[in-house]
Length: 423
Image 1 (cartoon, helix red, strand yellow):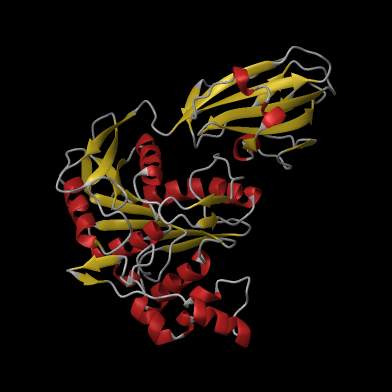
Image 2 (cartoon, one colour):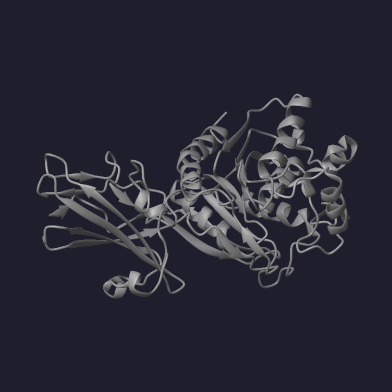
């Protein structure tokens, strides 16, 4: 029994051809994938029956049983989940590097087990990175290691702050040939501690800095953001015409207040707070529930105020000012905020204003808030917010969110490639 050729290192978004060869026809084998994150063991497993040729091929066979059900070449990767106690027995000999996943195969007939460790990275060997601490900016620049100029992307995270999401996204984009600046705008040294009255001029400085870099094609700039950073990406596109394309993950076409709430807006321009909408207060929510105008299992506390067209319009992002195509990606079971509904405000505004560029809204059923690159675990749906301390439920099912990631990722890359092509 042996694995077909597998890499020792690959990018996290790559689909692997996982095949086990030279098995007795009809034999049952169990594949497990082990990894560690923050000292927590993550494990997935699936049992297969070898075909007549003595092969198990994850790209064409569904497991008989296991942590996922359907044919899925990377099912073992997204279905990893935390395990403890006796279930974690066997990890002792595996790599504790959080970027390394160890694949094992065990046969029921007593054939000696086999294993292969794969280090999955965000920054490939053809890309490099450097810290950016200039003009008040806090970020990290990722670039192809070969000469440019390269099409470029400004990457901004959401309400978690810092550089966690943005530097992983930027590293992957650099590995795909883009110059990408991951930019923190709060919750990092030298920056505000919370998402509160962040000047859009800060991002204007970042765009100017990027445009001045010798490796950047200044006329081919895009912005990518997630969640509150998706809201921000739409705002920046509407504010700075040097941005030629926008990608917004689980965003909002409506501007919202500071987070955690402070009584102020999240964004400012020219020293003035960007107009924003507010959710219902706790008292208003209780009254709406008691009066039957709201459903307890809904996001009506976001959406009821926006039924007032004038109110919604005042807080709407002027997306019609964006100087290029726009791609928005949401999960219809997002439980952090109603990103699909909030994105539709932007879609309607594009339509009403006669927007001349391409607009696409990818909506995924059974997917939640955590849509990004594929193959990461999608089983850990609940966590605590690192800034506010609130309990979070990302929503969606592991299968639905994994599908949304797998389907949207190549479409997002194709969108950027087309949007920033020479014209």
